[in-house]
Amino acid sequence: MIVEKDIDESKVYTLDWSNELGNDTIEETDFDVGSELKLMNQWHSNTETNVLLEGGAAGNIYPVAAQVSTVAGRVLEKVLFVQVIKK
Picture (cartoon, rainbow, N blue to C red):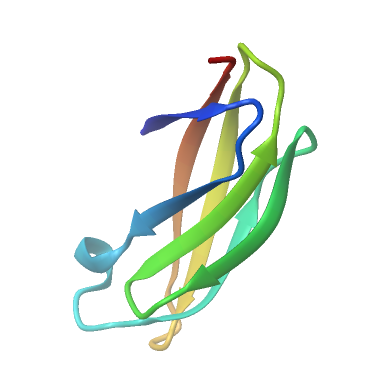
C-alpha cells in the first residue's frame, strides 16, 4: 500500500491487522522507518497499529516496516510505503 505525506506535516498511519489476527490480539508492535523519516510515536490496540511520522524528502518513497507480536506468540509483518510530496 502506498500513502502520501506532505513534507511539512506530521501524520498518523493506521494498519488494521484484524484479518490476519482472527481471534488473536496484538501484544507488542514495532515500526522501522529508516533514516530520513522520523518516527515520533507508535501505539496499538487489540487489532490495529498506529505510527506518527514526520520528515522525509519530497519525491521519495519510504518503506515503513511494521511488525506485531501477538498474545498467541505469532509474529506478523506488513510494509507501508510512504510517498513524500510538497503541496
